[in-house]
Length: 389
Image 1 (cartoon, rainbow, N blue to C red):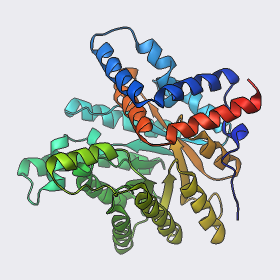
Image 2 (spheres, rainbow, N blue to C red):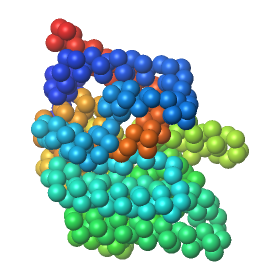
Image 3 (spheres, one colour):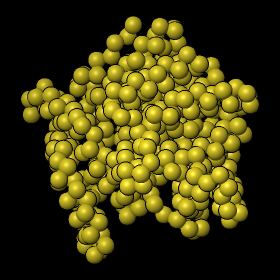
């Protein structure tokens, strides 16, 4: 059994100079305060609205840490830096929350450009895509929550599927994988329906499309198994990216306000149990499921390694991947890469104006997850002490 030392900070922060490490420490120290994150987020949005000159500060701090760059050429530098340590990159166009035909065409164009860019980079095997970037939110909500959605909703959803198909078709032609992000539960049935259709079309001989399963929802383990059964019945390989989830507070708040049962597990232990059962299920069915453990959780990461070792599965098997967010959990990413596993960073990119909502969400999520930022601070402090800086 291979036990990886995820506390090895020398490997985790090998790519950072002393100055960069100290800057990272200061950033996470600020993000460790929910009050500071809340005030900072509000002030940032206000400053942008008032057109105050703060973009330079953002670019040198939180943008630099959590994004690969504003353009592909800037991203290339980040991609090459990761590749030096055998870490791949997953490109994620960071714009969020825009609707309308013009916005949808921008999403399609950016997705196609990212796929073409990835096809020319050996260390960019995957591009990420949000279905909400291809449809009005009310359409996704209508398809998800109504037994008989209006004719207008159905027509618009069909148009969304056509847009998604154009992206998936190009990804399949150029042999670039596509991760379809999970989103809020009130949109998710529509997203699942569109993604399942794309997997059926494009996951025959090559796993192009991956759906994302948010295991902080108490129904997603069962849905993963249902998805696999459907894939076996229809003759395609299931692509499964396993995450815990990104909208916990939002989900619980909406459920309370609208008086329906929360889709979120009652506690962290239940979520962790389902996540690890999902990992186990994918490993046990790895010939017909290609999976990605997209997690910052050390136990879940090591659990997959243990299962692979027990089943004598090669570290570089094409159906096994790990990934973490750019700027987070370097102790997992770089130690996995050093040990010879297939691992990638989720690398958001795009103009600063467009990715500000992503960055604010990232800061708020990190400050709300108990222990996550504290762990980052502890590991950075440990490495600074080791270097005696």
